[in-house]
Image (cartoon, rainbow, N blue to C red; front, top):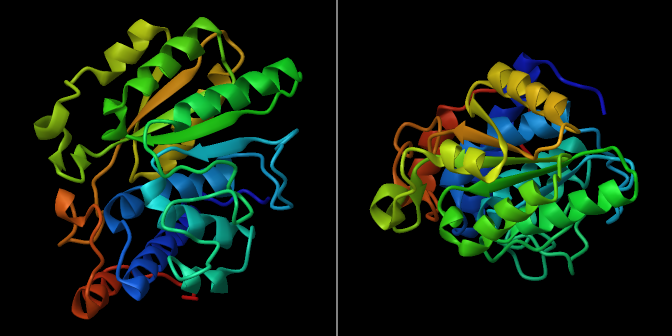
Length: 283
């Protein structure tokens, strides 16, 4: 796939955010907050960073693969896949509808191109990514495995087993990014179960390479992901702390856990869309 420039990616991310809002509004359910916050990252990943093939197969041999651990942000994942050409953009209209392939959380039995693992249950994505990355190493496949997780789901103990395992096994073709927005469904992560201010130090102590990036600065994302790829093959998995703001950049959604899983009403949708200007077209 042709690599887009930072400006082109930023423009596309705005359109993806418009898709997210219209999808969630259309079925009156879903998770707009985290989806909006991760649009720049996923657009950068699929339109510049990863070497991937829209002629989809589950094996992913010879190409980079991605696993979404925080599966509730499926709207931004589906929009990115559709805009990248994995399936028709028109199908976004079916989000969360009866018998749709675009379930509220990604599933595999629907055979939606681009989805390699079901991710309704939080805390499992890094483990799956470890397995896929180790399989690539065993098969002498030099492509990379990327994963995105939420900071709320890091409260699940399985993540920490995966962190230990990846470092111990020197799974150095694995790049995990955490969406560090400080919010989860019941409040801030600090209130629910504080992660501390040293998440990077924790992962470094486990034996990971650590990078930081601004999840709303496309050029910074591209530069950081390039640095992460340069660290591949050097004996350690890579962990990226991505600072974002839930609901970004819609002013009345930003920074509040209240928009974790609430659909905008008609007036809120129009307000939000008015703040998201792009030259691209809605579905």
